[in-house]
Length: 264
Image 1: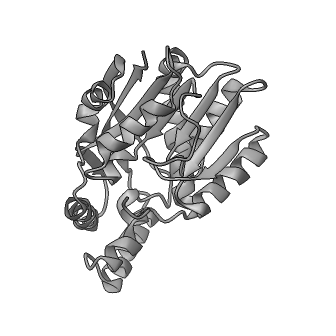
Image 2 (image 1 turned 120 degrees about the vertical axis):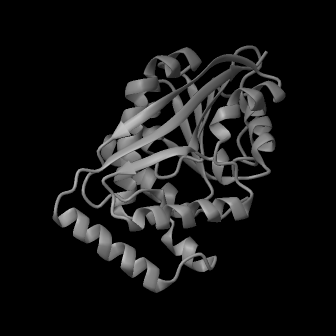
Image 3 (image 1 turned 30 degrees about the vertical axis):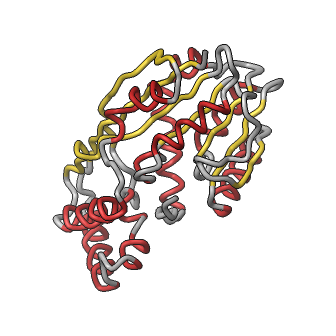
């Protein structure tokens, strides 16, 4: 499995929280249809810092339960702290998307968000594993992922395009499919699930000051893989700071796809 590339700074955690709020606002009806209801057992696989997991835990409380799974212990620590501050009970476990260590056939809903695009070549193995975690006779697997070819950041400094291209090149070299969102239904079908819903939408958001997107969050990985230098990072940082000082109006645009399938 690919290494976790997004550095969990305060601004990056805030980005996850903003994304989670947008996701719940747009998708809440689908979460309900997929099984996110009071009393449900839910697995949030690849949970990152837990922004979605705590929302699911609030939905299923008090009789349900959420298992938040991630390979990164630091991300799980943030998730646990967020759950404690939010006041919702939540289990955490270290595990990968294709080997969670969770009990098979025991979950009403298994959710995986923005993970497949980071695991080139393993996409079907991951979805197959998730399908096995869902309860026979109605358990669901819910996927959300991107078409990164649609991403735009209007009003960004000119270095953004350079930084973004290095980030995309890192994914290409890793064999990742940056348009994986366009084939979520195929992955569910191949895993033996009945596709219930599949749709896409364009997110439009104004990033708060200090938020520079996943390419910036992955800067350490870009340096480690020889796709950027420390001088590049300093130059990008300087350009963003100047843009933030003049309060340029940033607008992010990007396509996200969601789909869920039911286990016979």
